[in-house]
Image (cartoon, rainbow, N blue to C red):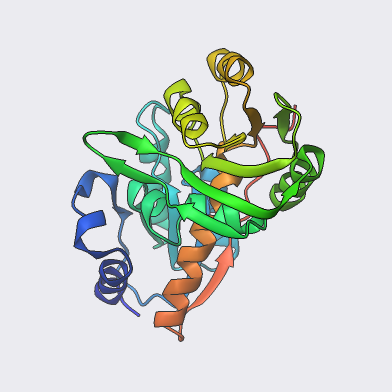
Length: 253
């Protein structure tokens, strides 16, 4: 597979509607070589580039590009990618809102029985959480342990109501907005799950009486990147994939 083949695969997987905003995906660096091995991770970082080098990766696929406010990181990563002739492609919002994306993939790992609504984005409403249900309600403590096991890291948990968990709202990554929690509560969710939390997130969940589960930004979203990588291989069976396993740097303190 070459870069043009890869671009066609992305277009087929996401479609024109999700790829309308071209500032939400793209290449940080493209190398002039065949793509035989893809490494995937949530973040572009010096750590993931070093892992790609060690594992002989030709193309890194991530959810996040290097953030502008991590000053100098993109330049440092690009220099290292160029030195080792490794391409990098990132895809942010489209992966959050596609059917196999970040929220849906986490919900499946939590063993939901029915996905009612995918996470969505519109200019009128902004981001909206995905909604899913358990056929048999799950005790909050059991769901917490299920999420800890899936993410393989600590998960912060606030139990703010008594019944077992029936209906969850999920927005992975930076879904800490109180407006998102309000949306989940208004849609009948008893539990809200995300990858970041502030004082306001925690206080509003308590005030609204909705349970709150918070993992890390990185590891609430990795399952969506893994789903994308698997779909790329299904369409290009001559390509190998490997996870660039990031350290649990957000919740290890």
